[in-house]
Amino acid sequence: MNRRDFLGLTVSSAFLRGRFAFELEPRVLRVGLLLPTAASPSTRDVSAGASLALSESERAGQLFGQSIQLNTHPSGSSVNAAVIIGGTTAHDCLALSRVAEDKGIVFFNVGATADLLRRAECSRHMFHIAASDAMIAAAIAAIVSPSRIPVTIELWQSALDRYGGSQLNDRYRARFGRAMTSSAWAGWVAVKIAWETSLRAGSTDPAALLTYLGNERTQFDGHKGTPLSFRAWDHQLRQPLYAVAGGKVIAELPDVGKGGEQREQLDRFGDPPGNCVMAAAQRDNG
Image (cartoon, rainbow, N blue to C red; front, side):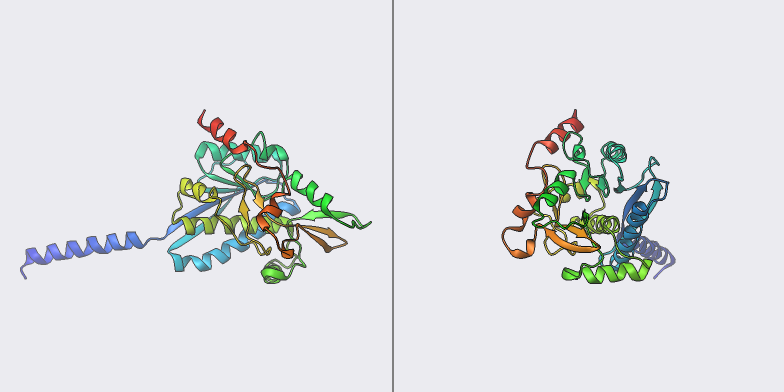
């Protein structure tokens, strides 16, 4: 082999190594956690739940050639992410929804219950982890024997043990030294859904994520005993809720463990089908 051939082989090998390394470089899903700067128990718990899901996702990332980054910003900061998580008030949600629409990205509402966000102000970019006021009212109405002790409707409760609930509660308590709350579960499941959506879609592109989330066949596991999915008409997460009194779960609403069509049971809690998403899409395009 002459010197010219040797140099050509060396250059070609270097090019191939560089190309191969580039192709193996993992996709990065960037998630922004946008919460108010003022500390509160709910924002603290959302952040903790998101952190737990991040660590669990990172461990699995190497198997799939993908990584996830969770960036924390105060509300109103510039966003460089495919997914943003936040919303403790309706005002915050409206602002973050506009950001998501402007940038063409996904927004998960983890705290705001206002029905307005699922009706006149809904958006095809906004998905609701938090239960709506209509869902909460339906759950309260469904309690057969309300206790004289004040009852709250929760997304999660630290005594849940079925369907992997005890393991999730144990992991959270071991890491943070306190019980997992509804806010913590919302932060955890929002990151989990973002991560699983990206893996299943095979992309970190927001448009691909939106398409996958909007598919009626898309389902997720939140350790609640039934597949969780987003309604097409208002992007509300279908999920069981828990009536809690005196620190104990007194009812699961609806009780999907009793059989029947689970999705139909879950859709009885909250708004019926409407033209919300269609109106939002028209507004986006107009």
